[in-house]
Image (cartoon, rainbow, N blue to C red; front, side, top):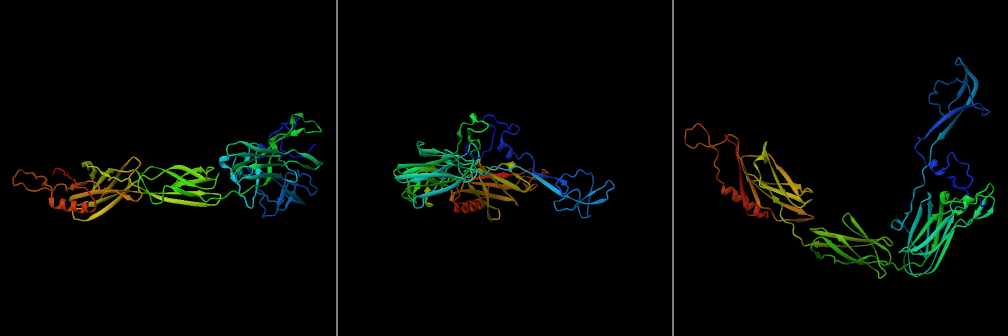
Length: 471
């Protein structure tokens, strides 16, 4: 006998809505594309059953619009005096409202207290939807109230208060009563807790059923399930505001050093609040304990600086420190060039290093010019650059690598000797063949190259590689 409207899935006794027993599924089914269809009526509203119509020349009869003037016509196509009424019927489905509040404590919406009062508006969008709110309070009394729509409410609401460990503190649900043939009350809920201790608590809002629909009769529905117990609500309440302590990092100290890798981080903040600790693209969440402190471990950079940032949402406070790794970046390895690495006026320099590092390769040309090439070490730890525009002579190659702003010493030096095809020198014997060029190492050039690379931090080892072809 309570005038509550609801959607049906025919889960009540004596249900006769058997063609489409699941209203919400039908309403939200977008499998059929939206569209429209039309028909024509006489002025008295009866359906026009004639086979022919006519219209002005500017009217497209294959695409009639609601404002087009359409007239009845006879079999010859001649227009009659009767103007017809164009009736359009549009078809579509609807989407459920967007779920704006998380369904569990991990995704709970934070409630803020202003002068010991909190408030939020929400909507239960489907049978399995619940809205979970998080609230940080100090010692004292707590109240919460749910109000639903004043007219035609579908939602019979329940509210549940739990602590951070999931223990139930208080709960209530609607108990609908009939005010008149068109109005019902009692669909909301209300709770009170007189002696809450400081900490974080969670409020869960849900739509619930009432009575026993399996006992429905022709004159008494007997109740309803939570299937159609959906709709908007207003949540209000009171609690004692907690002491807000801005987030701070107590260790490590700003400017301190560490040996690379994981870093233990500790700090302080508001009791019960979640602190987000971020290093680069990684964020770790930690809750401030009852003693006002928090602790976690983050992955620091192996080399160079690591900046650690902690944020606390309740007051938008932030703290950060920067620490420096003492780990040394080793020089990259420059591989010994092979004959196959030289072709078409270029040679390839390869090596290994720290994945992601920037490798700077220094090349000293036979003309005594120095230039650099840059590349990035791949995930497999290898790198390569191509030296082009070659001239005959000896090329001296060295490399450094930089990781997170820290640069290594120079690598050991490799040399590459390039000779022109068909070039040789006369050995004094008339054997009809040219000889290969002198294979002696040019100490003057090598010494110059080494000195230049040593000034850049290069190593002292010179490997002389010669690339020749038979004349």
